Image 1 (cartoon, rainbow over the protein chains, first blue to last red):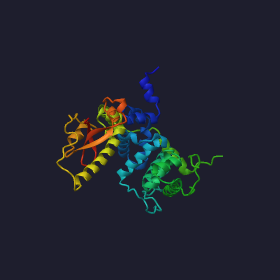
Image 2 (cartoon, helix red, strand yellow):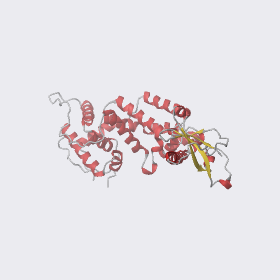
Image 3 (tube, helix red, strand yellow):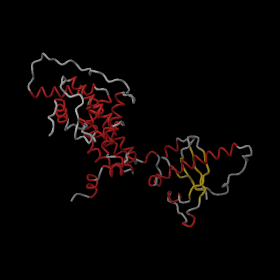
Image 4 (cartoon, rainbow over the protein chains, first blue to last red):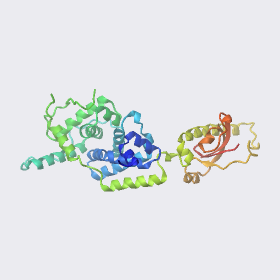
Length: 205
Length: 163
């Protein structure tokens, strides 16, 4: 049987560990970091498109958790969406995004032109290029569209969680996601993508 | 029946799969481990306003103290500015031998305090217990005279019990 302290740290709920952290037990950060570091890093990487920014944001998020764990209220939801909200703030701050985004969305994303004359690559190379082009297109999305697209489609958070993280209404999440998908589809020459595809299984009512 | 995945959804799935093993670099792991070790030596969480061990255990007392200090400062200033004020009146507890101040903030912050004021305040006698001092249960409901060391912005830096 493992020692009690080890068992406690690695089996304790996020809320219990956050509470211990808030009481001054810095050691509670380690299991929380191991549990959530990849999700936070991936979110920041997809949002920013840069590994260095993603690493910095991941570090910022967990240092913030270390010193502000008392701000987490377990009665309002799980820890990971709260951490993603913090990551969103940090990554947007690094990108110099303003809090208000009232501007009209662009009709097209500014991507380098796709070379249609190049010979068709093999399947693996083509798939790799498609993924790289998708990542590039995501980073070209307006920030508020990028938030919901990365959270819903790639971080696989529910609409409700995404609304809470972004501080907006559920219908706003739906409309931004629909617009983001439309922009991506056009940028990636996937124009047959339905503009407002009904999504299921994301916890939306 | 599930609808077939669109081409865009297929690309999302491929992107998710390509990043399934993505994790922060070892330098980030090291930075977090260092931050944990440093915080473990210093104490975290309540560090925003607790250094005294008693306050760290009972952090809630700082807010009542701050409120009491703010009210006391206002009444103190109001009385001092009143036309019939008697500025030469001796302090109420000049005869009492005051105990030493007990910090409620980190000592480094005390050293940086600059122009701090000593402000008299009456607190519940039970607040003695928060500082590890004995409380007579028969008098627990009474108030006790204290002096608060208050920074110019109203933050309470230290407290002492004067009777």
